[in-house]
Length: 212
Ligand code: MLT
Image (cartoon, rainbow, N blue to C red; front, side, top):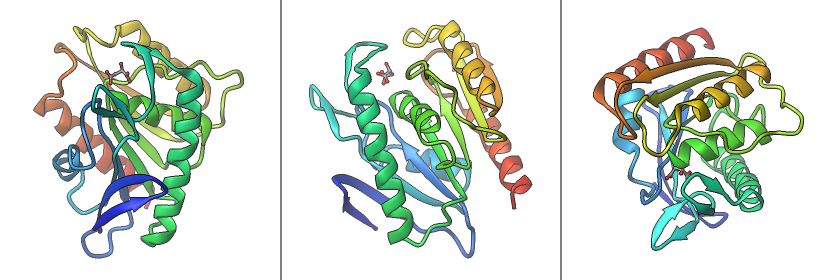
């Protein structure tokens, strides 16, 4: 299933059986609504998948918000696009009859960055998040209340795009907001490896079991 909703091309895959969870799949630069479906299945094969395509094009490559340069974000665009994405999630939740309390974001790179922005600007929208190769989207003036929101961060020690200190700052600001953050480091770079997908799967299974 899928199509267009509030300007977002997207795929929707219903859950298996009565599974109440939805993974909101947010691709990296150059991805689309199909890019993270295989990853979603590896993380939770029974959940529903809601997978929008980013509405910004950078030299033809879809993204979720504009940037001035690599790692230098257009703050105004990021904030506006984050609100648009939140409206899309709310509309899709109603249209597809999803449980609004059980939506977990899974984002890679640019998708992880807008997922972090969703956490900061729309606390309560997400039940949790798996952020792969995320950066600080912006420094909030007042920390949101993310009490007990579980967040998994997977970072690469030799990532050329994301300096380790930046991921550490993201973990710190999410913790300051009350989130339960798990930060795991890999020796590799920006690409995601099998072992960390398995680690993220186990983390998610634990979180889901604890919230049912
Ligand atoms: C971003 O622009 O969100 C980050 O630099 C990661 C990416 O290249 O997508």
